[in-house]
Length: 128
Image 1 (spheres, rainbow, N blue to C red):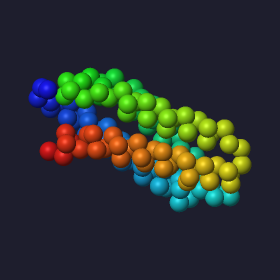
Image 2 (image 1 turned 30 degrees about the horizontal axis):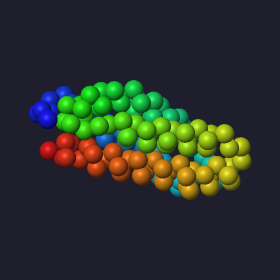
Image 3 (image 1 turned 60 degrees about the vertical axis):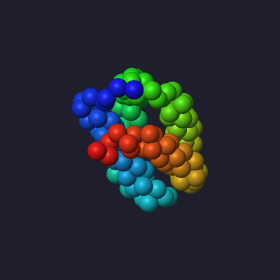
Image 4 (image 1 turned 135 degrees about the vertical axis):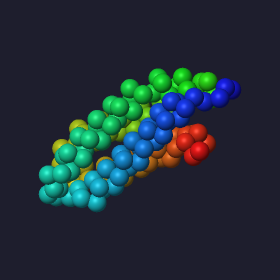
């Protein structure tokens, strides 16, 4: 295990911050989704999807950082893909009522669990 570089710490902090912002977005969707969701919900949803793309693009770098610390990151990527699959299934749902139920019962809990898991991994590095 080697000392972690300052730029890697910054990267991990930015990654964690993006996770926090995404959670806020999901909280907003959970609160506002209903029979007639406000127009802003579509913008928030689009932002969340773009954030998932950013996370995905960053995983190779995080995998390399964690490898330098003796930590295998692949299980976290597998869990991330599970979250993405849940989101894709949610996007296929046609009715607002079913979308709301799936969002609250499946998508948000799956994301929150994954976020908590990866947050526990990152916390020792980003808390300094």
